[in-house]
Image 1 (cartoon, rainbow, N blue to C red):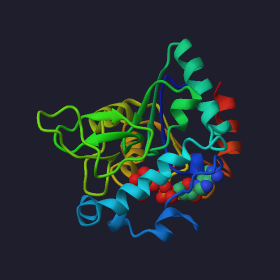
Image 2 (cartoon, rainbow, N blue to C red):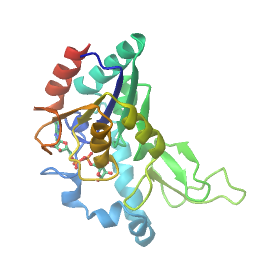
Image 3 (cartoon, rainbow, N blue to C red):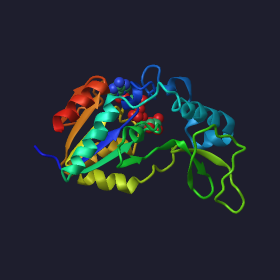
Image 4 (cartoon, rainbow, N blue to C red):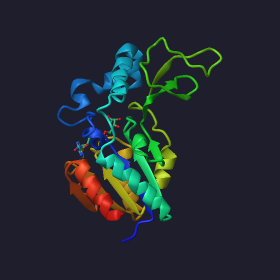
Length: 234
Ligand code: APR
């Protein structure tokens, strides 16, 4: 079957083989850090320095020469180029805050949970590219009275970026592929059902099965199953 409108949702699992820790696996980030301390507005308010430091470490990791897009990121970039050239539509919704899809060359990306390499003005909501450490001493240049900058990460209790665009793309998809996400965090976890109800074929590519609801599932490391699946589609 030829699919015209393809939507891919990615989670931490696609970057695991690039050396970036997932959240909920064994040795996941949330094993060492209480979510409410480092991934909520309340945690930031309580102890901003802890939160700055947590994201500074993750941002610095992106500058490590060993951390680079893997074969799964690369095949998605190749697929996008080829699919668009054939007249198809493609949207890559990522929950990841690393920059590996961007570096692999995907163009139509919605980083719905924000980006590590960006700082957010807590007053105007303006995002600014940011690759170095961020601290409470950094202020924005967008407000008349400069305001403190915070990590540009969508925390629990906050609304993801471009949510309308996500739902529009998902509701129009004829193929929806979920890659390397545990499906535990909404609203992203609800995209599969929206796509399925709209008539899309739904596929899970993951190290392990997270749900019985997908029409198809292929299980193994992303560098194998994602490459196999998209190579067959091209
Ligand atoms: N290849 C494929 N899948 C993998 C691999 C791999 N090499 N390694 C791990 N996985 C899968 C795991 O089986 C799991 O289903 O990746 C998934 C990782 O799940 P989570 O750690 O929960 O990450 P994610 O789903 O992206 O989390 C969603 O939660 O904490 C928040 O905002 C954070 O964006 C994040 C959101």
